[in-house]
Each structure stands twice: as C-alpha cells, then as structure tokens.
Image (tube, rainbow, N blue to C red; front, side, top):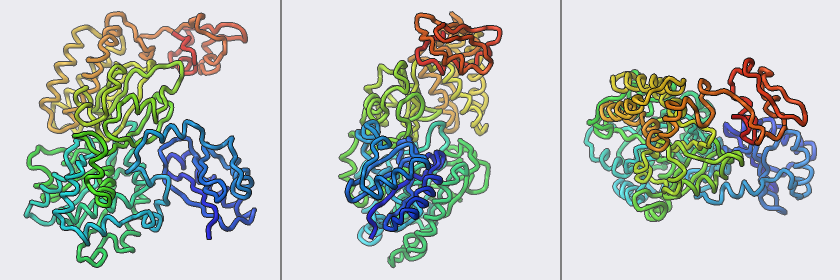
Length: 585
C-alpha cells in the first residue's frame, strides 16, 4: 500500500520550468533511499505559476505544497519530508499561494494538478464518466437538454449563447447525421485556459462531448485543436484511446446501444478559425473563412448537417452539471450569468496564471484577490484588457464592475474566452491599441473589405500617432472608421476588432491628445517620442539601469547618480524596465 504520494505538475508551465528533471531526480532519490512505498504522479498545471510545483502527501504531515523546486532541492525533500515526515518550510508555498486559491471556486479546473491526465483510472476514481453513465442509462435526451438549460450555462468561447438552447435547436433538426465539435482553437494573445484543461483533464472534455452527442442525437464528434499545443494534442490522443478501450466512447457505450466516436483535427493556427463557420470550413479541408449566417451551424454546419460547436470550457462544465444538477450550477454566479469562469491572468500582475471564479466577481476582487495586485509595488494597475485582441480596455475607476456577460458589454468590453491582461501605469494605451489592432489586422481572412482594408487603415493612423506625427483629426477619423467596420464586417472578428481602439479613446483620450498635441508619451513607451534622462530626486544610485543597458550608454559609479549619453542611447527601454523607482523619465 502506498504511504506517500508525490504530485509533480507536468503541464506546459511545469515542463518549461524543468518538471521532467525534477521527476527523474525524485525517482533516483527514492530508489537510493529504498523508499518503495511512494507513488510519483505526473499531473497537469494547477494554474499557479511558481513551477515546478510539488505536493507531498504524507501520513504525518498531510498535504504540503512546495514551489520553485529544482532537481538540486529534491534530495533534501526526500530525506526530510518523504523519509522522516518533516516539512521543509523554506521551500513550502507561502501565503501568496493560499491567497491565490482563496477567492476561487474551481469546477472546470478542479482536477487540474490533482490527477494524472494520462491515466484514465485517475479520472474514473474521481467520479469520471459517472455523468455519462447517468445520462445515457437514466435520462432521456430531452431531460439532459432540460438540465443544461436549467443550469443557465452559456457558451464560454465568447458569444455567451445559452448552451441548452443551442442543443435543443440542434436536436429539433430532422436532417442526419449530426455532429458535435469541440472548439479548442485558442488563439488570443495571453490566453491559455483551454490548453491547461486539455493538458490537465482531457477526459472531462470527452465526457462532455459524449453527453452532448447523446442529447442532440449525434454519433460523431470532432476536437479542433491548434497544432501549437503539442502536449494537449498528445494527451488528447491518449485520452481518446483509453476512453475507447474502456468503452466510454466508440460503439455501444456501456452496453446502452448509444455510439459516439471522437476524432482529433489539428488546426494550422489561423485566428479566424475560432469563428464557427471558418472552423467548419477548415475541418472540411477548405480555407478557413467565415460564411454569412443564417443558416446557423445547428441548421447547416459540418458537411451541411446540423452541428453544435462548444468550446473546451463549456464542455468541461457539462459532466458536473449532469452529476450535481442544473439547480446546483445555477446557484453560482448572477441572475443572467450562471456558474464560474476561467480566466488567464497575464501582464503586470503579481500572480500570473489561471483562476476560476464565480461570475459576478468584481474585477477588483479578482485582481487584488487571486491576482495579488500589481507586479511591482511602485506601480499602479490602471486598466485591464479583457476578451482577447477583440476585447476592450476597462479603466481602474470601473474595477467594481461585476465580471459577467452583460456588465462587461455595458463597459465597452466583452467576456471573450477568458484572456485578461493587466496593465499598469507603465503601459501606453495608444500603443496597446496599436498592438492588438496589428494582431487582428494580420489575422483577418480578407474575405470582406471592411475588415481587410479598414483595420489596416486604422493601424496606419495609430502608427502615425505613436511615431509623433498624429493630428487631432485622426481621433475623430478612428472613431468613425471603427464604428463603420463594426457595423459592416461579415464575422465577429471584424465586428469586435476595433474595441481596443474605441475603449482606449473613451477612457484614455488624454493619452492620445498627449501624443498628438504635446508629442509626449505619458507612459514613456513610444520610442519616437522619448528622450531619456535621470530624475535625481528619485534615483537611489543603485546602478541597475547601467547594468541593464546593452549599449553602455549609462555612466554610473557607486555612490553617484547615473547619467545617460543620448548619442549612444538606442531607446531600447531596458533601463526603464530595470529601474524599480521610476527614476528614468
């Protein structure tokens, strides 16, 4: 019987930090010490990026989490904790770890970091596939749909359409066959929610797909996952194979006569293929380009047959809803936005990573709870960008806004799939808008000219402003063009791409005016407008700026103020990043 369990995070974050080497070192040390009654478990990432994370579950200490573990630390952990039951406090996760999880309600992420995603037995032991058994053995398809409708679950891919209604519409179609598609084409900069679920709990998605297939009368499903997610793809392949071997997908599931197969499709990484009709075209082997709607995919989707498309997070919620009931799920969240939402926290925040909170949680509670506040104490968070490159910027004075589908739209943003980038006072909002518009302009499929040409024209104007050549008339031009693009574009990429520009103009117009009128970037980020100098009142004579300068353009001696040689300075901003006291202006 196993006495000690050792869990090591092996998602993308953990592996990039050296989880494989840590695992091997544990194997060596356990063998050397003769500790045979220990179980090493590879898990997905937990969302708290202080990798490598290691949990030791010992009879004498219970569960203890260690962070930032390297192979060199492993012998001490084995000798003291695994062998002798003594917690090694200097490596244990500190208060920030507890604070990170304190405000969360983990449903979709509950198993991530807790089970071995490559071992179906780990999933089965944690009520895995019980929901599928309950649905196909004890419920009619209509009852399954009614439970999903009762839960109030809305699509987590961005649009927020009621999931149960989508399933009901598809079931009502007479045309056969029908298809279930899992949209795992996660392309937003700063977003990694779906990737982590696929890497840490792939069977939850398969189980959700099978339940969806039973509900709408489908026997075939597709997972469309971008090829840039090699670990997620590998674990999905393993999960599909194991689920087939154990009779949870395939022919005659659990002896009920219901059959449902799943195929994995690797996408080439086009952002526009996150749009439903473009994704369908890509699966069919065509160029990924959107089509006008109606007809909607539930009417005429894959190969012109009725099709439902749900994203990873939506489908991962389904087994919990079937097991615990729609009323339980509906008790979480707000009146119109039920349940929880997973967010990828990135940018200028102390705790970057994945968080899952009840919908209705305020932006402030998210940022200063699990997020831990600004990354640097000297900085202040001034805004967030939510909803991906097509989302909007929300300023600090609106941080008491609840995070739900309707409130965010009212603030000029969208929920999106859950990417949330935190911006502090070192961020130039004009340059940020330019960055996101550059992304969406590049990713436009080019089918409709408002998006193809309009976004490029907006980008030209923004480049003009950040280079110091802007005119006041450019602001009005940007607003008018943005609204025209949103009204006339074919798909949601064009209809939402101008959001970063419109929201920064709405909430941070003074930054645009500073660039245009004063030829100054308030955040000291736009290189063309910068001339660097040291503010001696703020300078602490630490020399960090000089050490960071790649051109040796900063002269510094211990006990003296630094000085910048403007002729040598290449305006790379390395000194600004290095200075903790905002002394470089």
